[in-house]
Amino acid sequence: MSVVFLGTSEFAAGVLERLAGSDARRPALVLTRPDRPSGRGRRSSPPPVAVRARELGLPLAQPERVNDPQARAMIAAAAPDAGARQTVVVCAFGALIREPLLSEHELVNVHPSLLPRWRGAAPIERALMAGDERTGVSIMRLTEGLDDGPVCLVESEPIAAEDDFGSLADRLQPLAGELLLRALDERPPYHPQDERGVSYAEKITAEDRLLDPARSAAELERTVRALHPHIGARLALADGSLLGVGRARVLDAGSPAEGGGAAGEPPSGLLVDEGRLVLRCGSGALELLVVKPPGGRAMDAAAYLRGHAQPGRR
Image (cartoon, rainbow, N blue to C red; front, side, top):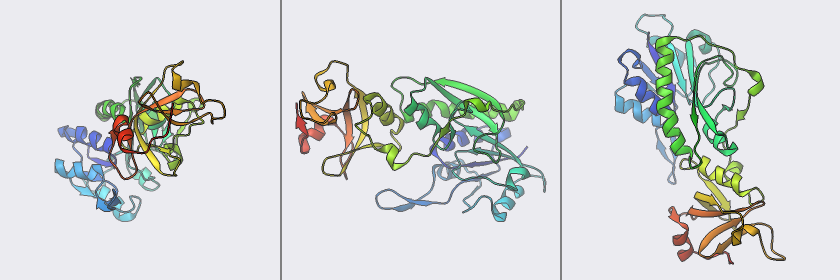
């Protein structure tokens, strides 16, 4: 059986590495997205899967559109026997796959959630934001719908109270690789998803990144963890600039800052309380532990307070 791998993200790169380590399942071809501008200098950079494929010595292509005839011809040509159907593994590819490609080969999708919960683009982030106690990995057959195809294998993983995106993805990545190899080797039967449990993991937007003090401190703390370290949460300051927030914790009930503002003060806002950088929220208060000022580097709150204009003291 010949395997073609489609993926883009760092998570997908880890799954690719595990697949490449198996002699029987080493991909005959890797397809990923084209290089894109990134970073402050907007320099063209390859996606993580392209970097990993080159490191592993795997044949690599970066078509602009995977559904075009040229890309489909590359996939078909990777088979050792002309015209044979491929097994195409898809993991965090970032582009919709349509007919006729969907029907030309067996398409196996690696999705980091307990389907049907969190179908869509950001399943790990949304599970953390929602405060889920568990998530996992599902191996499914790719269909025209959004992650709604039948599932053959599922493995769950607990979400710890201190987990952020980085730590949770680091555990789900090897789990995904092992589950994928099991699916390819054992060929378990596929079963339809239960539509009663469907939820959608929408792509993370600029609005999702913004910490709204009107929300509860617990919600904001989960958002900070869900977006660290790859995207980053942000807080709008009084001067209109955005302060990045890398780590935060909910203050215990009854702490001085947790109780809200004095008479005439708004119910939420940023203040310094006993040397701590604290955000009063609609419910509770959040201590900002690691922040990133506009145009600067990440630093602990104490360093930030030493070098920047301080919000109101308490």
